Image (cartoon, rainbow, N blue to C red; front, top):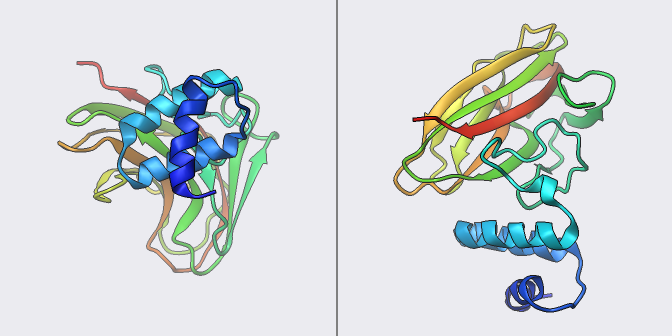
Length: 219
């Protein structure tokens, strides 16, 4: 199906018609909107899709702009939920045996060279010129190699780094990473991901992450 047909079909089907269609069309349409910087329309479409497909738990709220922050829900791999992409020397696993909140965490296993990113990310709609509080929990097995993973939040379009955590290592127990940031004049969409710094050099070990939270900062 072409993008032109997709853009014509999805909003009409969401708003008015009894026509049935697959959630993947909504996810493809949202990616199209992200690519064309139409964040306001993407938020509206996601809210409408949530009502239609029974996905209210996947809608960001003022209590937490990060969707499925404790990995308790099925990962939709699109929209405003977590998205994942296979990376060299990285394995992603939902782990029900070790978690900070909910009933499972995300286990990231690093095993080799060429690692720049863990391959798990989430798009988050924000407001320009606004401040936010971020928190997440992590623990790890022994991580070998120079540097370490970091939680990173960037403006999707300018790639400006708005938040970069300390190194996520030397934590044999669940430990919090916290911080705050302020968006720019035109920032409407950010991406949360796990970068490996320095990029490319060998790294081995396990990292568990859980309980992600992002909230507007109280004035």
